[in-house]
Image (cartoon, rainbow, N blue to C red):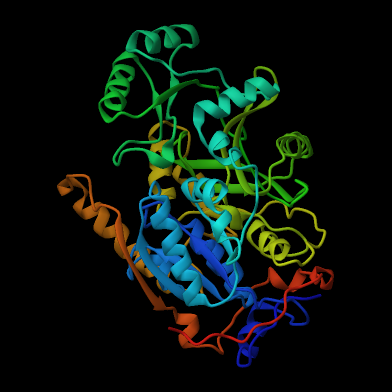
Length: 471
């Protein structure tokens, strides 16, 4: 059994988390790349904790010093930077500057579509300084695009909802006449959408359709309309996995989205790990056909009309709720990617079933809508909270991000009626500050996930490096 090569001083904390410490090379740093301006994105924090608990020196890109994730105890260094994802030279220069600060090659993990697309299309010159997945250059953009994904599914015979890219309001109304209301409206390139537009929404009638079409037309944003597939409890599924250089997907996890925010058309705010051999086989077969490499997060809906899983979204990066999943070897997709990219083997394991995941700031809001629609009672909601295994923000070994999330959510709710304008623009200034882990080099903790990672994970590991002095 192995976990991490832990520095002196962590014995008491290791015992508290049930961690054993033989032979895993965690000397290679990791960078969590976040280009999405949403300061409340919790996926990056999950990566920081997963790798930081192993003992990996983790660096992050954040909006500013008061971003909740920027205050994790597991961050070795913080880059305060809000680049424009469309400015390729700016991104290359900033990441090269960060690499210079780190001083040695580092694993690079994007947490949003914009970052994954950028690395696939423009990352070649960064490879001497970073280790990251190498999918076909055009594939992340193709699968992240909503209508291009529909076209790809149609060409490959992958089940998916009917969709259209209307060139006029009349065409939009004609599609609605064919499939009926409600229907789904999606921005075709949500990673590049204008601020204030919702990437996915449910359209209930002709008036909402006309308003959505007009809003996108005025913003110059593409709008795709998609057939609404009737759902219900147990019909919304997601798939998380990591594909190596041969496109073999391991680990591969499946789960059920119990609640989302916004309700029925948003991110998972309460999910459950539920192994499905059928779904796993279908998705891993698709990934092999595509030659996909790297982390991925798929959303699907089980169509009761024909019994097929219909592919709704394909995100070519880590999913925000990835820490829901764990296998019997103690791995999640972030740790699997780290092991593979640093030349260590991924130990075999089976998905742990029944785990549940809660996003504390969004689930109450989503649950309120389900309650208003008569789909969820107060007792049922409270009962579901008692089953939670993993939370997006709260962690007893890393409390500060949770506290800052609460402060920010409170401020957002209090000031939303007064908010106006497009918000802060992207900034080109690059500022670097050491993180809390660098200030306390003896403090490296673990969790019960690590106690199960087997000793077979060490394979051709990179040479150890001396720990750099924080800049």
